[in-house]
Amino acid sequence: MLALRWYLINPAGKLVDKKISWRGDSALRDGSQAKLDLSKGMYDAGDHMKFGLPMAFTATVLSWAILEYGDQMDVVNQFEPAKDSLKWITDYLINAHPEANVLYIQVCSYTMASKCFYFKLWCHLQALISYTQNP
Image 1 (cartoon, rainbow, N blue to C red):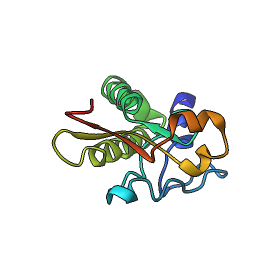
Image 2: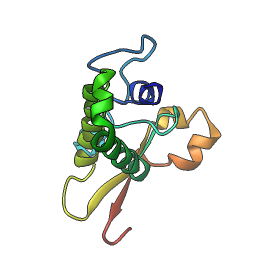
Image 3: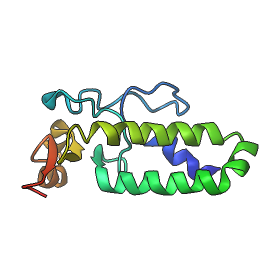
Image 4: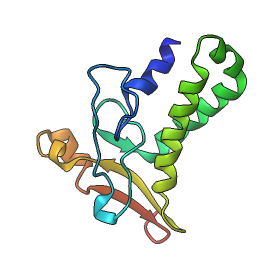
């Protein structure tokens, strides 16, 4: 049950059910430059960066856990929160693929990047995009 708390701590976007008192809304404008809603999803490690491929892996593992252990999750009232977390991630992933051959693979806050050298290395763009010509 404690492992599932990660999904309560790391979501981005407009939080609908704030079960963690110190967590607030974040990344509400992610994707707005491209007229997309990339506000949801999960932060990678509390660093205000969203990486699409690790997030897709997270969704895969969570899906598998729900399929394999959903009945045990239900006993401890974690089945619905697990499904909600999975939907939160897949909503982001669907929005990050707005058209054929286009996938937003990384989103980060440049404001945060300007305060930290590490972020400057990785966040030179608001969103990194992968095209067929730019895989």
